[in-house]
Length: 474
Image (cartoon, rainbow, N blue to C red):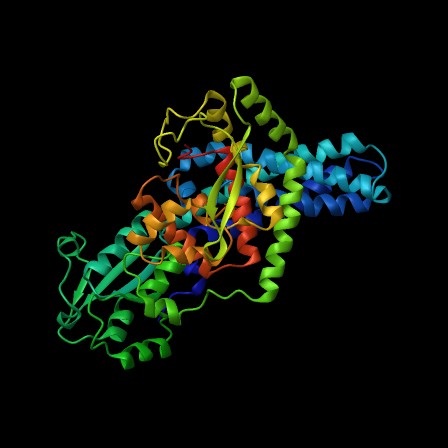
């Protein structure tokens, strides 16, 4: 008998559920108490606050990475960030509400400033308490092992070891109980698993997957042998019929780690798995999304762009902008537009990747790069249709040729337009090597394979975390 599906949820989903439940209970009470002390409080404003403040809070918690794996691993840093992020959410909700009041003044009257600042203060206190209580509750669930995920992995070779390593470092759930089922017909046991002191390998002379799944109470069965020939598919079908989900190694990694395992990937899986579909409606919505977001961002960030131009002018002579060949959809070349952050003669001896503490970067360039202000002119590239707001970062043609020669499927990232931000950018620090390019490709392929407008919106939100708390910026 398998455990209830509720307990198979990832840690992030469990925490989000706790946050939503606590906010849904406490926020209406806080609004009711506030309304009881304010005579003549209009109903329309109360309803607006009841919706806008919790939505802004939850969106900011997500955008700033407080549902990401590292937020659970580094609890101290997460606890310090909670009040700051909640305050950002409350301030955002205040701005949104004030804008709506000006557009639709009929829904609000009376003591405008006093009432709204009271609501903002209540939101900060209420949502901060909810966030801390949810995280304490999650910690209790983890300590009591109620969120443990029981995996039965068929195979105990190198592929199984890779899976264990990735789940330990990147898995969406922090707590896995993994049992490896080995049969000599599946190949050799990886020595690193063989020496595991926990003794998580079930050895059998004849593969009995259903019996092993019942023995360990598996939530999911992952097929990950090094040698797949001779696998008894009838046994796996019997497992599915008995209620045990069965999934291939590559599909499990894609879903659990949210990237494609390039090291173990085979073209057969890529061909027959879902994804890589871009219909006319998808392209229309993406282009509309690009136009609306880029135009809005260009208007809102105009002061920052002017600051960047002024900083470059004060720092010395030379052009403010620079253009460079980059690769986008279907391998087409376009001229990317950026603020100049390096010396004019930065590539006098040839094109090279940027490095940490690169001596070619100007004093103004250090600030502009850290704040990502140098990227803002690319909004013009998006308006022209040369780039998208979300997509793989555009690379230079010469580097694309070099990387494509060393990394399989590297050119497949050009199935979509290059982006100002992307799934690789919010998950992997800046890279300047072939190994970094290979790691980032695993995220780019995941994005191309699983593209949707909602996914674009989620990446856009998470970009806020990268901008405010940058890591690996060069």
